[in-house]
Amino acid sequence: MKTSIIHCLLLFCFLFSGCEKATKYNSSPRENFEALWRIMDENYCFFAFKDVDWDDVYDRYNLLVGDTMNQYELFDVLGKMLAEVKDGHTNLISSFDMSRYWAWYEDYPANFYKEIQDNYLGTDYKIAGGMKYKRLADDKIGYVYYGSFSSGVGENNLDYMFAYFKECKGLIFDVRDNGGGSMLYSDRIASRFLKERILTGYTQYKKGNGHNDFTQPSPVYLSPSDRTCWLYPVVVLTNRHSYSTTNDFVNVMRLLPQVTVMGDRTGGGSGLPFSSELPNGWSVRFSACPVLDVNKQHTEFGIDPDIAVAITGEDIMKGRDTIIEAAIGLLLAKSDSAEAKAAK
Image (cartoon, rainbow, N blue to C red; front, side):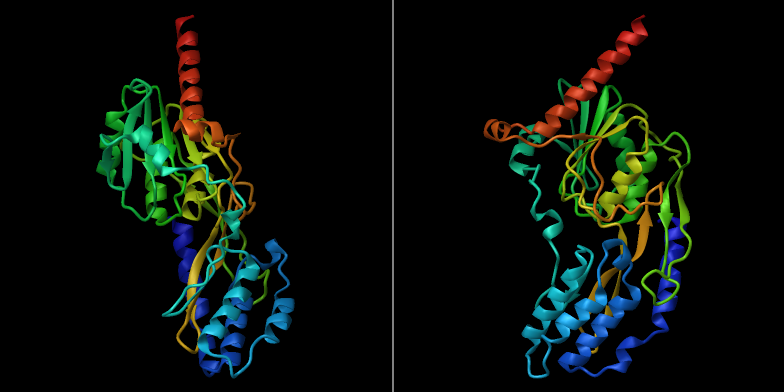
């Protein structure tokens, strides 16, 4: 994991552990409401960026909380209050349910269908750690599908995969429907596409309870792997379900000259999540440490592709993935162009 992010985690934990907010409240519905509101008020990192009036949220939801309500009614109210920040990293977690905000992707087309992807992978694809991979287009194009950054990928996995693609003209790295996971794997994979050390973005952490009490942005760098690297053309495939760590991966990959991002806008989710506990034992998870891009801009709402492509209804009927087909076409065209220049 990146050094500055570890620094962010340690400092935040230090600040947060000293607050001991939960000890100020008993376990009545109203006191749990107050505890949740204050934990978010003092520690959530996107209030200003998202223009959320958290005091107004308090006034509206305070009217909905009564000491005679049961735990299910309270959970419903508190879950809806958290949804006001419109953050897929923000959840209320009890023994019987977990609140979640899904509107960040619901108005977007799927742009990924496993049953159609199966037409490309077949059953003879190879598996290395969490990656499925195969050669397409008469063995000219390598195709990798990585469905979760929670699925481990080792250095040897990557070595064998790149060796298998050594004769290919280009590579498709598909992270559609990848909801995130470990940044360790994101950095490990991205480092295989680097020629030199690069600045990938910045991190900040809260230094006080105010909504804008942040440290100055701290730069984050990534160095190339000392093992096999791929410096030939790459197309990274994305859709709205490319979220959290996947958003961070795309943010890094789009900086590289040989990489083209294709598909739909990513889902965002750029805040590093932390957890706390309410007096009644429920947990609250929320974004607490923002990660910025190289221009010090938030990517919380997602990253646009270099080339926007959507799966068409006509291709769905034919069992074709419009985005994979467009990626193959682009990579073959780049290969033909490079060969033509070399022949002159």
